Amino acid sequence: MKLVCLSDTHNFVGGTHFDIPDGDVLIHAGDATSSGTPSELMAFFSWFGQQPHPYKLFVAGNHDEHLEADRMSAEMTAAGITYLQDGAITIDGVRFWGTPWIPVCGPWAFSLRTAEALWHRWPLIADETDVLITPTPPFKVLDADKDRNFGCKQLRRRLDELELTLHVFGHIHEGSGEQPGTHHSVNAAICDSEGEPSNPCRIFEIPPRDQRP
Image (tube, rainbow, N blue to C red; front, side, top):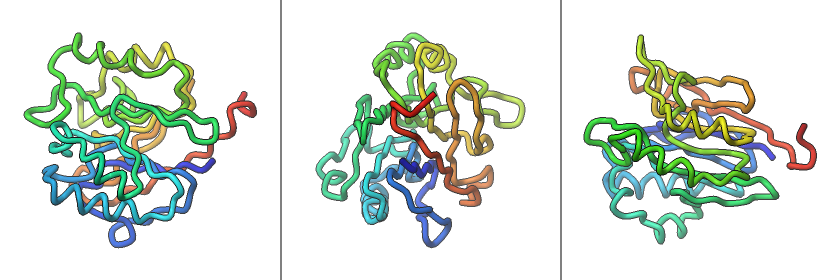
């Protein structure tokens, strides 16, 4: 199964501003928009839903503000998008889990202000998850902006309890890249530190569960 991962497109769309490789599952890990207005979101749904990948998974980011109050489920379903907000989908035996929460980030959406509030969210991630999709990185994993780490410490604690194959996230543009480990970590931010769509989509091949080491 070929996964194509992106995040932090902020109203830029592929084909015009960046290339999207072919694949089986297209994953967007949040911040599809800049202001999260319904019109911005509808434009994203239209573009994302037209991509040829058989499955299109989306998790909201802190800029996708309207989705905190209104999931726009009918609009995304009509566009052929699977929206994951503390939920899962299994595709050919691979279990994906998506959740939009982040450590507090100013007045933006899906921001939780305390460690306790964050810790109440992460245990919801199913133990059987193969691919986790979040906007936030875990602490000290592709999360550095200058001399500060913005990832979530409580999420990193939860990851230590899971046997993931892949974790896809974004949010911190400066951390765009990949990091191997007990699972593969991908910061799929398309926009760079200047807000320009200069980073590539990230590709990951995941074998069936019974063929994994």
